[in-house]
Length: 262
Length: 159
Ligand SMILES: Cc1cc2nc3c(=O)[nH]c(=O)nc-3n(C[C@H](O)[C@H](O)[C@H](O)COP(=O)(O)OP(=O)(O)OC[C@H]3O[C@@H](n4cnc5c(N)ncnc54)[C@H](O)[C@@H]3O)c2cc1C
Ligand code: FES
Ligand code: FES
Image 1 (cartoon, rainbow over the protein chains, first blue to last red):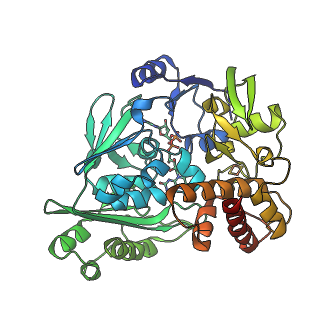
Image 2: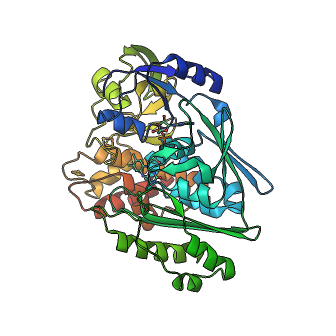
């Protein structure tokens, strides 16, 4: 790892100020993506601004069906939250399936969505739940937030503070994990609420997470695994890599969509 | 350089370290606690697992500076005059061959036992296999590791 100057932020404003003062700063959350990248010398920020000490950014709040998750809440804390499991079990399952226990003890929801890895789990969940991403400057709808491979609607130095969503009537998540990394080779999050069905797919699209219109239309008419069979799932725009090709991923979308509903 | 202070295996540890020092390097190079191993550079193998504030973390994927003020337990902190029940179980069940992965396995094992106990959930064989997703062993084939953890969990419950 190259040299770096470490700072611990006392508050979101302090983090923003430290970020502006740095020549090439980067925010540090759980470090489960950023530190491996720095160890490989693929990232070399001049300064790291650690968000770990900011208590305001940590915690899950459930009031009625309104859910708010602080940006620095770990995957383990989401996975273990009993109140959240009652209103939105699929997001709890999703968090409990990220990486392994030690990764879940450190990795955070804010870090995961800021990174927007095309094979990460949370982007599918937040897109299907029509979540709102709260930052120190504004609110961004999930539809505008996830803009492509490793890219988001965040501006330079903008800090995610929380995500929020209304728990839908029903939702489900299924992923086919890569056997080595546990990242999604394909993951599908389905949600139904207020008359609307949203289906988001991660791990498959060559432009990152996306909503599947065909599945949304079919499931709006008939919310069942059988309805998935009638949908044409094209391999166009899907990734082919050493793990599997686009046609295989198209089939995984169908298989995971069925499991997510079941 | 950053001034850091934390509690490691019940003792105060203080040092001035380069800002980019990983927790594992602080433990191994500064404190000479070489029981914690480094088996990869991709955060996948789990040889480096220690407990930070009672939770298993990969010490190769945390800055020492981020552990400021924390309670850290390494494999050296488990035995108390005699082997910890989980260590004894690994020995008795042949849960190791070369032993390189073992400190991380044992730290992950004691962490999962504690978490399942706190949640009132049963730590089944299937659950153990799932919980070990972040610990790679190059030698044993895992069966004896899983058996050792089942036995160690029973010993911990009895002790
Ligand atoms: C072995 C392993 C297996 C994994 N498996 C999976 C998996 O199965 N599924 C999955 O989804 N992920 C997986 N991950 C990634 C993991 O979920 C990470 O925790 C996550 O991608 C990044 O979160 P972090 O808190 O660690 O962020 P960091 O690594 O600290 O930061 C990541 C990026 O986000 C930025 N950032 C962090 N917080 C904020 C914020 N509040 N506002 C703005 N920007 C911010 C940082 O500057 C950095 O650029 C795995 C990681 C490892 C090491
Ligand atoms: S050395 Fe930490 S996970 Fe491999
Ligand atoms: S005993 Fe050799 S790596 Fe596990």
